[in-house]
Length: 93
Image (cartoon, rainbow, N blue to C red; front, side, top):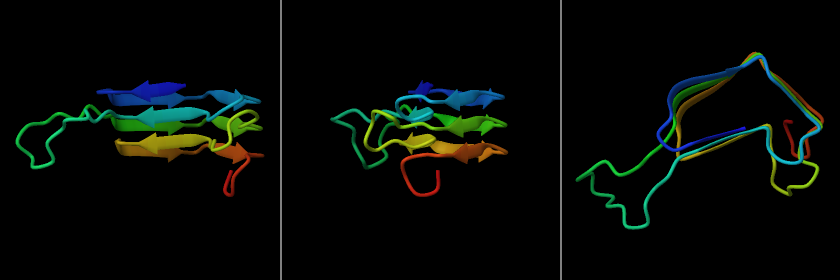
């Protein structure tokens, strides 16, 4: 499952991610290549306040080399709550 761009106040709950080939949930924002980093204008589009709750992640990452139950990049306030993660290709799930 992918959450990308300016997605705010979203909830993913009560899902089973079993025997999937790559990461279970991917939460990622966007920064334009010409984005100014001096704070002059808001150009980033990123997920904010995303909650993944009561979900099961198991036996994932069959095809991808750098997979995980949850991948987060260029995002803010992403929470993983009351989930079970097992049998993943990396340390910690």
